[in-house]
Image (cartoon, rainbow, N blue to C red; front, side):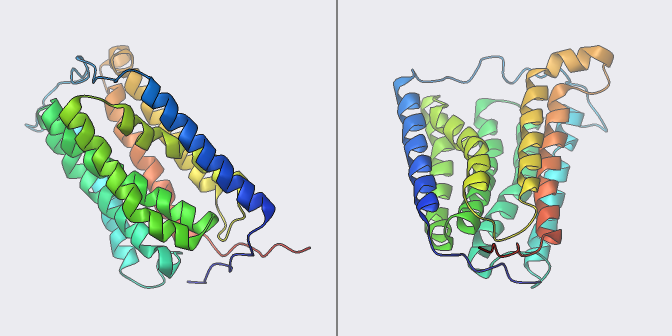
Length: 263
């Protein structure tokens, strides 16, 4: 696999972009701190489709998690074969974290959906948070600074894990909400502000679109299920989010070094 183009010297635009991201992060964190604790909704675990499928309770909500593990394992297998994925060697650890988290999202979410409750939801959210933070560190490393991506990886992963543990111990979703939605908002900013080292950066926007669609159909769980009692919004949420993960995997398979800017 071809190596990504070497990053150009830091410019004033780059510095301004970093300052903007730091200021935005501080503003969002401060705003969340001022908001009262956000408790888990009491009806969160009451999904529209509770049918048994193939002898499995909540069958479609359980089985629709399998694509996460399949994509995660594909990514891990490809990372284990040099040249299979277009990944900078210095940032490969971030992608290992992403695909490990993705592979564990399947069994974690299956465990939760077999018996939905706050205690089982912990094992659904932990690998999701880890996967999010691994991918976010990789994007920071590729677009802003490889050193920053490597140094931030353990910090981000620890923060993601802490956000879930904090919710489990206090029933306060504010840190977990930050971990989930701050990357979704700032990744487009990073893609716009910082020069690419790889092509197909737009695929990340497609992946974000899939995840936003997943959250939308999740909120329409009962409406979608009532429309034909075929599939629920929550099942579609899993499939849309897994599609976003597949878009990232495919991007890593087919992207090429970005052309070096001239002038």
